[in-house]
Length: 176
Image (cartoon, rainbow, N blue to C red):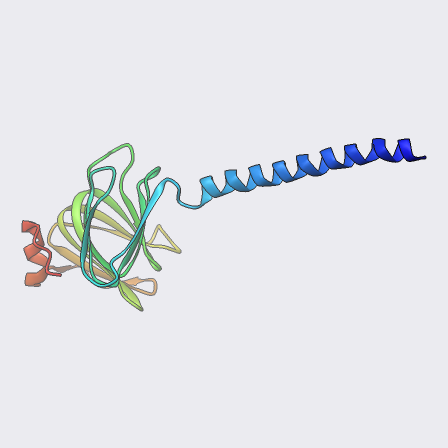
């Protein structure tokens, strides 16, 4: 009986080793493909911060703001306030998400303020598509010098951007 037991034990050991390798390999693959291995995350904790993304886009984060950026599809997520100068790329437009809204760059620079109950967009140059996150067909296209507010699912009337802190951004001097 001892020889039969000895033959079964190596088979079980090989199966256990193969299972461990399969689980470890799967976990490693998932980690590399789902943890932002192809992305960037920045939190401007104690001071305003300017960053240049790998695609050449320039972002100015206000103190306390957080930005996550996926380098594969040029999609960013913002919590807080930031000024964006995305590098033009018609094949892969720069896209931004906040808790309530979606933004798509149409060759421009713009300021986004993700507030507690609303999102505010000010377009400095070019055009930006401003959409409700839960209903992307509810959207506006703003042009340079316009400003809009999204609260809930309602946009306020598009208004001119006249704040000196905003208009100074045209000269790349964020009013942060």
